[in-house]
Amino acid sequence: MPKTKEQTLAWLRTISGELSTATIKKLDATLPWYGDMPPGRRSAVGLVAQQGIKSFIQWYDDPTTTTWIAADVFGSAPRELLRSVSLQQTLQLIRVVVEVVEERVRGTDASLREAILLYSREIAFAAADVYARAAEARGLWDARLEALVVDSILSGEYDDELPSRIAALGWHGHGEVSVLVGTTPRQLDVDQLRRTARHLNADLLIGVQGGRLVLVIGRAQPASSYDQVPDAQPGDPAIDTPPAEPVLSFLDIATQLEPGFGPGYLVLGHEVPSVVDASRSAKAALAGFAVARAWRNAPRPMLADDLLPERALAGDPLARSTLVNRVYRPLQDQSPELMTTLWCYLDNGRSLEATARELFVHPNTVRYRLKRVTQVIGWDATGAREALILQSALILGSMNDHDSPGHRR
Image (cartoon, rainbow, N blue to C red; front, side, top):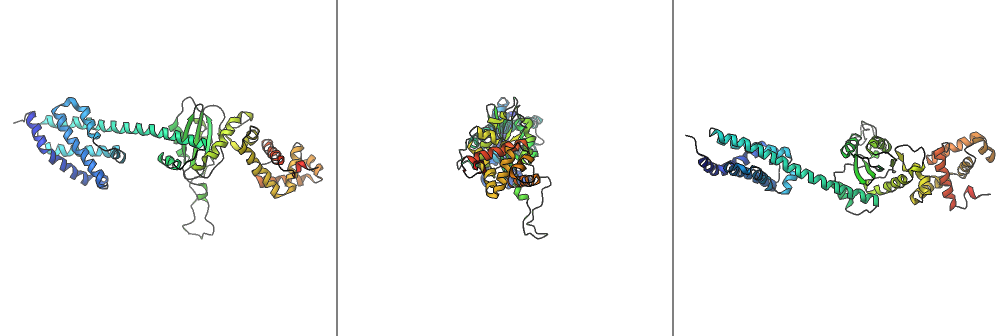
């Protein structure tokens, strides 16, 4: 004889404790992640399962309260549990609870089994809603934290909390870092920028400042880690295996990220050892971005160091010191004749013959010395753009050096 609803409710309340115990046993037997949990979290998971059974009985009594009771199941869980248990694991938990209840009520009224199916559907939707809201809140928090980190890097206001904030964002970069500055597009696709960076074995911190888009680019592995270990013997495990793919330069990475920026100039700061030093690269990139319009045929992207003359004219002290320390001082320390030859070559409109006549040497000697200049400082004086950089460096260096070739008579 079929039971009335009141009788079924009374029976369900009688076996609720039995169902809870059976559920905990099955969780331990079928879900490995449950057994690996600390005791406190296992207890919290068990509490959610027990609350689910209790809520089902209440819902069976009054189905009009479906949404609220289903949501209350997860409302009883501590916040730490939502962080440590994934959505997939939650759905596995729901499946175990439903299976235990179905096994226990098998052979009873068909309406009760149908109610279990309906309620399991509602509870699954409730779980998805809880995790969706948690993910949305986490995304908003991450966006605010990322903006704070990028602002700190741009302003150079380093504090002891910056590394922990960067780690909280899931930063995967452990090698060198460079900062890329450009214009913000009308439709900024942050996800596409991150996907491109991951494909290039890099990570990004993204900041938007009005019409300016700033990317802090980090390598997933330091470039130096690919170097061979000196004095290692063949077969020594200390010898690093070269990467399957070549290590891309930051300029190559910036070129791949270029479509994610709006129209206009795109400037890449110099490479620094780690993300905590990124403010130095950011200052160079921002200074270059401010004067990029002065280079008529500027490429996209361009290096901030290729804009050293324009930055120096604009009063950037970093550009001035870079020009002096990377061009003037090395040549001064290397050889006076290299400095003199470069001065003469630039003053004579990059003419080998005119330089050779002034120095009373053969043009091939001038060629050799210019080649040595390139080896010392890395810039080639025979190129128009690089000649401008070198001449700016000589001018700035000679301003405070009365023994320079430019002051000799």
